[in-house]
Length: 313
Image (tube, rainbow, N blue to C red):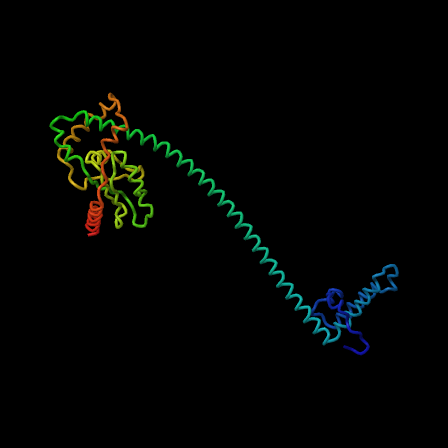
């Protein structure tokens, strides 16, 4: 710093000295001095006796001239100014980043609220559909059970003394095979579980066992306590509307049952409307039988495994 000059105050270093003199940061010393003279003339205390800040501004201009006309002092000030500008840019970037994060967070929260509202709406719609399906399913189940009981009553009424000799062969147990469409990666097994199959089949009579194949998810074996119950299931059950069942005999049914069922099917629909339905107790007493022992179930499992192995080959 030149002799006779006083060091700049800390307050002055916080100010924009170039802006105070209205010059560019790359101005020459001559341009700085010229700008000082112009500014000093306008704000000199003698020319502004009524302005109490005139003396302060004139003093700041003098200090700015001292710093910016000294090479070392100006270099130090320029370094400090650039550091402040860099810090301000970093702060601005952080502010912009915070603002963006805030906007993103608000957008995600809005999306989450919209998704939650949509899920609630879908869940309510699904609940209403499930209630409707249960009501319709109950009516359909009641109608199917009524038809089954009527058919069993007709078969019982049409029995002849000659046919009674075959009751031992038709008593059961009887096994049927069920197939439906199911992809390998379908965890729902095409909509069929053991409980679903049992619910569909038990209206025809007592279901002793249901075994779903572990290799082929679209295959199962069901065992009824009587051949008659199995025959009713083979003839009448269609399964779920969106994934029908294909039902066939696993073992050969008694010939008498096959011929009797063939003769009864043609006139069932016309006679069912004319006759009353027997009580539920009569129906249950006809189809209920003793559960098979564990050895029979094991035999069914082995038979189902053989079916799976044949299907794989």
